Image 1 (cartoon, helix red, strand yellow):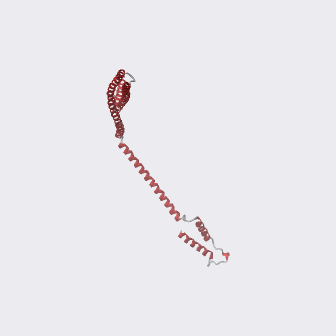
Image 2: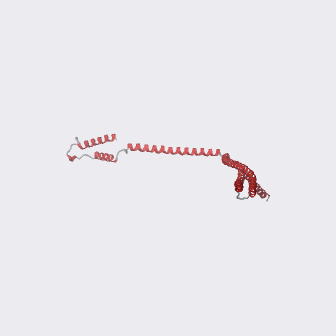
Image 3: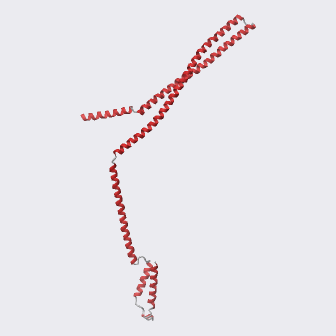
Length: 267
């Protein structure tokens, strides 16, 4: 029972160790940091867009206020012109013109304040754009470097596994097996060569016997030679009227035999 508990404890310890190693993997940590930087970049770009929108709105409002101030000034001039021509009372014209110029002055004060805010917006936009650009470049550099490191890590891991496998291999045993295989192949080649030698000797012997026995001559020549030999063994015909001294038939046969021998020598 105690041994089982120890084994379970060791298994749990090994699993926890693997999880800790995986959690502390530098590649995973770098990837997590890059994801966080991308989140920060997205938030910076969002803030930049909002500041740009405020900058554009403030700039538009300043242009509108300047237009309104200029319009008040134009109205004040018209009032004074009408007072000079007697169209309206001069005092009333002065009062209304003063009110118009006062409004214009108020607008100019607001424009000055908004212009300061606009300058601040421009500085904030420039700063945010610089920070976002630097952060984007940093993320791209880290991603590129991480890809290179991951490739190197794969190569080094594969090399390590290969070296471990080679270290655990029985090289001497493999060499012995190769030597045994070479010896077996040499024996088979030698045996095949000996069989060829024996077969070659047998063929040479058969060829020599056939040569002596006339096996190299054609069947027609051998048949004709046998016929001539049988005719030579037949006694001459006395009723033919030919004398034994002349023996014309035997002479013809002898001549034919000699001719055939000459032909056989030429073959």
